[in-house]
Image (cartoon, rainbow, N blue to C red; front, top):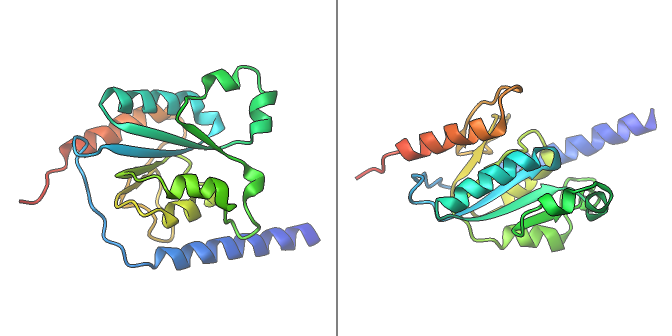
Length: 183
């Protein structure tokens, strides 16, 4: 019983702090795919193969890419072949470093917040821990997979559970290539 109440209280405060952060006055700057120079990608470890493909495609298009995963370094050491699959521009965010309110310890948070990027792609959309990070980032264009009850993304696309992440990325790329800037 106690654990259930603590879980409910923690989720309540996490969502409350996210809603407060989402109320900030911010103007989105929609950019075409060609205008984007730097990209931060948020994701989870089960998506690593697809995230690597997305990052590689972005790099092949001349973009500077950084990947942020919720994954502990101890988990990387335990999982066979995981270390080899991580790209050099991949930063690990240890899940134990989140406070009960959903905020991240300063060291890893600063790596993300200090990254100057044009776009943040959130492929871990249902993870409330990333919502706080995303809302704290000063980038002008946020892209995500699902909509939530508060303004989180500037551009949102729906993803079917059976749909591979790389296909969703291709859709995003197609839509961003189609955006026309106002004259």
